[in-house]
Length: 496
Image 1 (cartoon, one colour):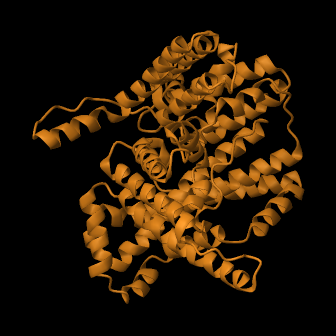
Image 2 (cartoon, helix red, strand yellow; image 1 turned 90 degrees about the vertical axis):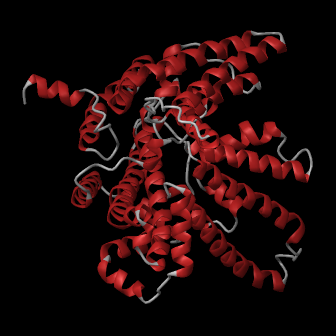
Image 3 (cartoon, rainbow, N blue to C red; image 1 turned 180 degrees about the vertical axis):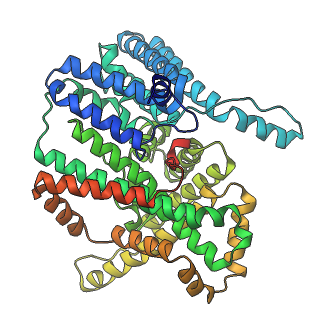
């Protein structure tokens, strides 16, 4: 390999952004960890080492937009200090407003400018030209992360950090930089200066998460996406109703395995380096209500929206009607956060209505039965099972609008399901898509297994010798290379 080829490999390529399930990242991370044990006990050197590695990671992901990342860090670092040092509430509020203008303004420009132009054209019949804007990978995540810093300082929950290097490291830490979890300053900054240790239990825990994440993403999500789900959602009219319905359930599994797989890998990689990231998913399809679902799905986003949007709007403190309005506004904006499309807004609205209904149901409609009574003990498991079935199917229904490119495709999918179902074709589908059928069944089976099964596997791996752990990792990598398509599939949430 000559020098030109090496430089080409190390440079940013928009056709091949750096992602966790690529061979380049595997070698890159191995190289990082070769030197890391020598530096882990030296706080200042360790911080600079991981900061430079993280900035290079983002450069390989988004090219020159690494400068936007540094600019966002610089602006929020400066404004956080000004907010804290201001004695006047008015001046403090002004600095906070400037922080919001920068954060939401940069996010709005890159993510929503063409969406606004498109909407204006549709409403007015005009033909304003679209702008040539590239969406930086992960901008929604690191914007919310930096906003949490200035907001926490404004609300008196946090003191500003003194070192810009430490703050830049918090913003750019590569495992969670481009697709979460959204890590708050109050969670991560105290870890920067603490003494870190790499022990066998932490390594085993990290390997369990990385194994799970790689299998979820590289085997289940990618395979069922490429070989079935994408085909149906791109051309729903070519498939029967039963095939459309299977694709809807398949997409529910795909997006869970894709996104929670990324989170698992991110948390595992951070654990290998001695840092702790918050749990982002907790078997969400076991939820028995839509409220419980949002306590289990994308936890870092749902809690962010709760603490920095829903509660400041008034939460449940200003009456029932206002609570329902606040829930709706929060979920509409949460839908818009996911993407510049009315489909995402509609998806958020569906969940807003469902959350409001859930509050109404729990407050006024559910009969008050003592759970320790005979009737309560009988109805409790049956009620939970019914709640899981209803919640899962509602969430699956709403995924149609999240995944479909247009409203027309969304309604076409529903039309095919309700008017052209053709149930006997199910067995033909199973015969024609055997591997897809097996992976969908396997994915949901594992998801609904009792927690003790997961804990048992994790405990067994922790107790296994290092040689066994290494062989298992090699086997997972081999399976990934056997299952992968010609092109590495990016994570779904990279687009957000």
